[in-house]
Length: 95
Length: 252
Image (cartoon, rainbow over all chains, first blue to last red; front, side, top):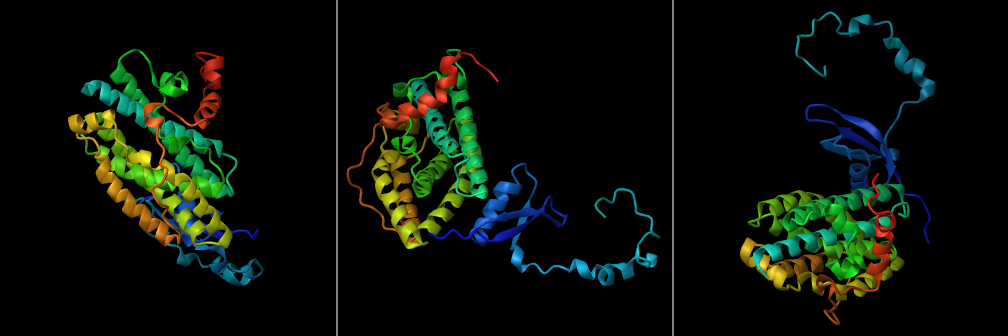
């Protein structure tokens, strides 16, 4: 009998049309298609979503926390990259 | 049997089917092989309990005798339940549970789709709502059947035995009686013979895809629809009805 654990998947849910998929959590599943079913049953029970992505956690390439200084700190003093000089019109949501 | 009596018996029977299979699935809660499957099973079990409530509430209204959904579920005896024998059988192992659900839900989906077109508006509305749930159940359980059938040698052997053991209870799905025929004639209810043809084709295709062999129709048994049950239903009801029997009128 094979007792190896099922692979880990990351789940992304689009809560409504027009919004981006957001990371909702992770789960174990035997394969891709079962991961989609499990994501539906685990993360959309209360009508949280209109679209689901699942991806094997091992397929995600992540930044290295040890390199955070080189990766992220150079952006900190570049205020001109922030679009704070515009007025956001009334009625624009989710910008 | 007039049309009103037939409709009441029919709706009550649909409630019995949903309640008994729902209760069987609830017995699996906290016993599923993986956390994710645990959630899937509990979700689907509660879909069935919800369907049972809708059918029983409607049956109680049709009856007009002052009973409610709880009276139908908790205060009727074994011989008053008219569920299919297939649904009252014990869960067995995981493959047995999956095989039973696939065999039943392949039928139930077709049955609900036909019911959603019937002339009784209330019943059609309940069926239209339930069929969305059952389409997902069938998809999910059929995925499992594929993986068990076309999985390891052991899973293949065991789920083939599940299918073989359950097969003789599938004849009752299509065995129509006076209730079925009256509802078909008076309300445009489902034609079980037509559903049987589609079920056989769909199940044969599923089994083939799962590398499983379709059993032959031998030694078919029925009786649940007439109130003649296996020895298993009494135990199921005893556990399910215990609270209301011991503490009549108890509420949460």
